[in-house]
Length: 82
Picture 1: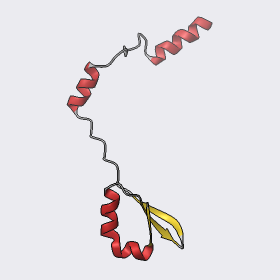
Picture 2: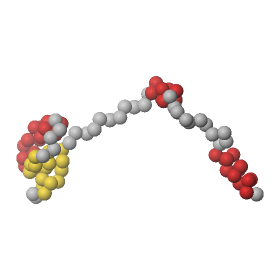
Picture 3: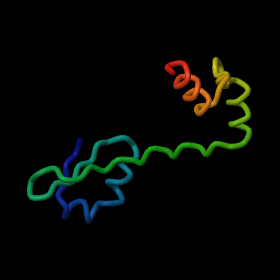
Picture 4: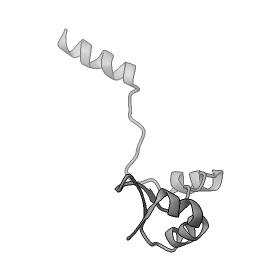
């Protein structure tokens, strides 16, 4: 981990970004205290495509639709208690 003042970070920002992208922990201090850490942003998740959704539907395990919808289930429970 390397720590740099705001003045150092301002003059060396491209180099510090390169170091952070390579995995080095880069911290910028303000008034002698660590204030900011430079680190890469994690990769964004891939969007779900139709092909992906179809694959998920085809490979779903143990997910059968309920015999009754929610309203019918509530009516059945209500009527059992009457």
